[in-house]
Image (cartoon, rainbow, N blue to C red; front, side, top):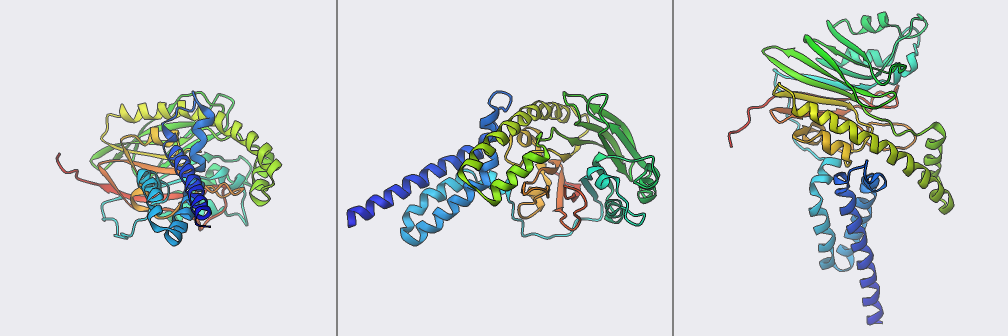
Length: 368
């Protein structure tokens, strides 16, 4: 019986080591170039799954044979940075200084498809009440029909913002727009051109008191999932039958991999814009359509800090449809900024994204 018990323990340990290896592979998958290895680069999507499985193993070993929990502990230690990026915990709740900016980034889904309820639009009301200094908007839209959200209606809500810039992104026939509303002067705006039918990025120069900062507002390549694809995914989650999961996974992974490869090129373009900025203060925000454990996120975030990792808590899930529980909206800041109280705000559900906002202030870097 003892030998059988040892055999079972060794078998469980072997399975545990396998999942530790898979966790590490997913944690470091952002170093795989999606345009060269698109399928493998999607492994980061499974990072939270492998985390949960290994937590279960860790608890099991603590109860059954605590010394063997060391294997899982070492695995967690090897991907501590990725765990903190994915699900940060910040106990400090210090108030931002008076001299700071509040930045809001929001994919508004065309202001909920331009809908008005009794003449009002909840997304515009939210923005008005946010008291943000800078608002970056993705999937900006308006109608000429007064029964829906018009440009005039938007400006009535956002009259506290004397400076605005609205740009079409994507190819010529695209009607997708990105916008920036600011309490500070927008000195210039440049659409960053890269291959995409409907998506794009815009770089702004903003004059904020005595400083000029670079702001890049992004709406990167979507995952090309149709409504039918999203239904398939939701059915897989609700009823994980073997055949359904197998066929559904193959379809979804193929589409996710294709989009990931396109975003890789976009991410490099954005990173080049960041590194070539002539201004020392930089903010990069928007809908990345990719998770914190991804090549896209890693490339864009090079040399920057993630506001949510620095001052947020939890998963920060920012997409709220079809059980795609991921944080795909971001605010990144240069290292001479400090972030406070970064929040993915779940109080409003009128878009398929939640807004993300934070306070940022200048930070004096210590000399090396």
